[in-house]
Length: 473
Image 1 (cartoon, rainbow, N blue to C red):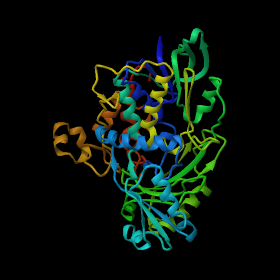
Image 2: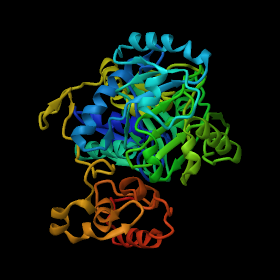
Image 3: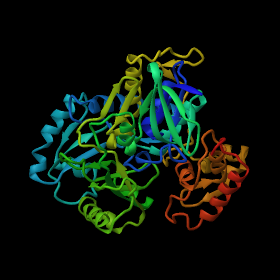
């Protein structure tokens, strides 16, 4: 079988592109090497919905983050994805850092974000009284929010699949052949599946994007994985702060952030370490010790709080400062997205669709859907995973209609058997426990699955044995 477009990579950017193309009369296939969508950089980030205030003005990243931020805020509301409007407080801790605040404000205005404003030292502590001593000034950015990052990729992919996009998990692209007469490409895939033929190919492979790029005879960039370690504090730490605490960024990194999460925890991180191994998601004693020291300095009360989990994510950095995004004949490269991919995802998808149209792909809007921004406009209603809204265990009417929503399976995170059942029976069910965690919050709490792990695993095993997942999973 042949497709108009093959999208390589099922992270937040690849799934966003699949969703965008689903709004047109285009036959698309989404290829993902892992057993689930959103398993790479997309699942391990600071979960901040950015404004783009600190992006480099005039870059493609600046433009697409601003556009994507607007689109994702609207999409999250329609899809029921948890968002908290926390705002962010950028704090200067030295006179030198305080002297750079005006330049950051100027950059923000150049990027089109004008709601940022300077705050005095007194207001810094009025907003966040638990901060450590020594603040020298700050900036208030009211539209930096926190979001449920796991549900975004899943929502995009679910919407795309419902609209007819062919999702192929556990499908790694291993080679590319050019078809004659500009007919497109034949993609060799593993393990042992028939080749995928497509007229256009989109490389959204994240950490593997340079390897895929070379298959298309590309070049000019190399992925240099940047590992970020993070610490998740227990929910009792949540009372220590009300907003995201940002550092004054450097030329290399945005620095260590302390942020609330929509799940009720507090996040500290990330570090920034260039690594050679693209699979190295280990944490280190040195990295965690450095984070703990930063936490004690910025928010001293964290020292008395329990750590729930530690993890590390890899960002797909390159030697270039901007996104590596362009069209080359019938091949589109979408690389070097780094840490802003979540916020920019819908802006990137819109831009990629435009590039494909310019390259000759007919973009005729579908007539069987309601148009919205020219895209498929029927987002699925995602399970609400945040703590600010009503969860199933709190909903008496829902429990009365289905008692499974009143039976707690994971006590730390208040996840019910009904939610786990629903996740296992969804259009894109989890391929394993990690995917189930991201869909329900089960096993993510204080006990880290010590209490609930066996029961949740048994429910997953029973579902898989009954072949309740999609064909080929």
